[in-house]
Image 1 (cartoon, one colour):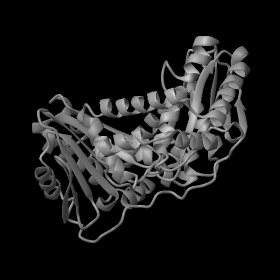
Image 2: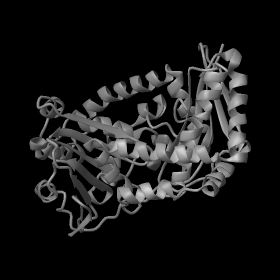
Image 3: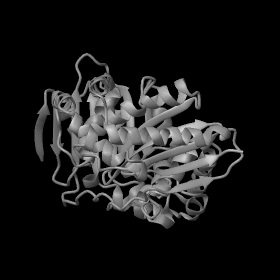
Image 4: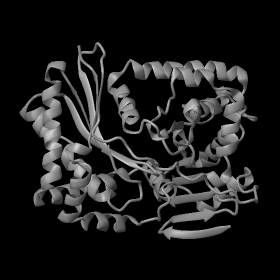
Length: 417
């Protein structure tokens, strides 16, 4: 077992079986956030099993060897705490935010969920219906559905293009045996990362995990590798008719993996382009032309790829104009980059967002887990702030020219009478 200090009050322990445990002690707090990340999710699914990682995330809450579903829901809530989970492209995460005195209980419950779920057939039929309702909810919400359609258009033959929730057909066919196989192949210590922040003692956290069996598996089984990258579809347009009051449009392009050093120039560009009320898109599309209430740019980075895109919701009769204006803004940014003033402001904005996000233990917990999950090294906050400050005009121009070029964009439009 290897224990190392990464920063002031920040420690990491790596077990012989591959489990990594990270914690950051934040003095003055009376709470703690703790989470377990499994490095398998929708990106590791086969097309015919689309949605299995998300369904498994639901199923573990239906009962474990030691607790009923009601006891799992009740144990932390009655003490003022919370328990939550999510499934993404690359990871499945289970998290709790509790009073510091309840941290051992939270770790115990998370361990139950992850390592000892019952996965019973009678629970599957009930929870399958819950997930099917969740899928229908997305289908009835066009400004959610358009993002699934965009991912599918960008990566039609790759798991990053699959719906995380799955489809009614794939979810309807999944069996308990398949869930148990996926669980066995993914939910083991070497494929897990535990992170905690708040009023946390690292040695106590490790001791709790050891007592609960996380260190018992002596054979080293490495984490599952990220899904292989795949070329994205570029320059294509897809339209889906639907009787809606608005047309919902997403246009964007694939980028790069999470640990790529160009993530800082891209984040600055995304903020300046469409990251708030002062952004180019907000000012042009909403304030100057009145074409939309909601228009924004966003970026996402995965272990094997990434995306930068723009969403706009507009009336059907102004959809073509909004699309053309946004494409024009993409082209202007690709050709000219940022002004010196925009670059300076964009760096300050990104630095401020980063520092403000670290004002609570849950955000710090996510930051701890993030560098491990993305196969990156830990960087102190001052180093990250310095790296952002070091971004120059040539850096942002190169990223803009490559990833904001109009001929690279794939576009999906949904709705419109």
